[in-house]
Amino acid sequence: MYVCNCNGIREREVRAAIDQGATRPAEVFRRCGAAPQCAKCVCDMRDMIAETREALRYAAE
Ligand code: FES
Image (cartoon, rainbow, N blue to C red; front, side):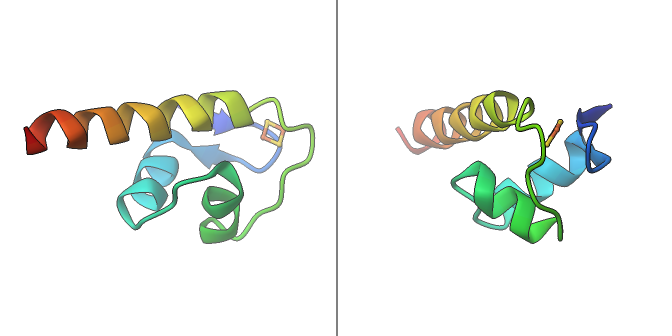
């Protein structure tokens, strides 16, 4: 499934970027070798980053 239609960035690529340390959508774009265009995907990327942080925080407890 695509998260970013403008750049063809798939969900698994966003998750890989987050796993590699991306904490902001701009870092996800950079790690994917892309740049934001319409930015409609930024909210979804933020949600994915927040979900990952929440899961890591929960796992650390
Ligand atoms: S959908 Fe990602 S920049 Fe447009």
